[in-house]
Length: 157
Image (cartoon, rainbow, N blue to C red; front, side):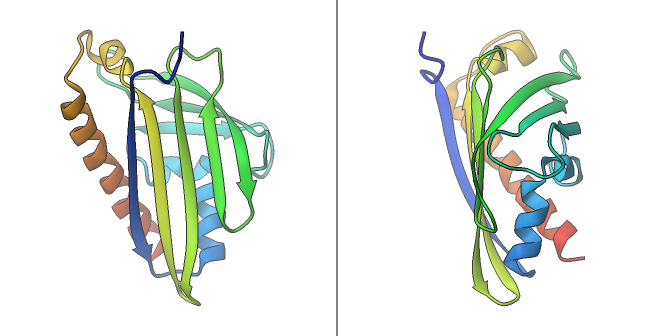
């Protein structure tokens, strides 16, 4: 079965008033996710710093029915001060991936782009029933925008 058959794909960017190295160091360290991604309880990595091959384990609130959903990811790409990408490992029930990219606008301003892909079947796991793709897409898009807004608040303090 193609694990990527029923996937939603979202991409959103935000401008943050911090230098790109500081921003990248923060967003590439998945253990910081709980500070800017509301559903995250905790994230661990099997390496001290992120690098290609790092295994990331995420405990997140999926729904009241599934308050602790554990997903394991592998870092597939790590370009220092530029890009980090991870994808769920094969033993996970649902496929997902994310890419976090930074681009220096100037010495003190950075553009962050967050790309997220998710197997829509996870919705049935969370709620016990499926929802139309457009609703999941709309809800997830709003959630990603909220994540990035919170990331901006955290990094601009």
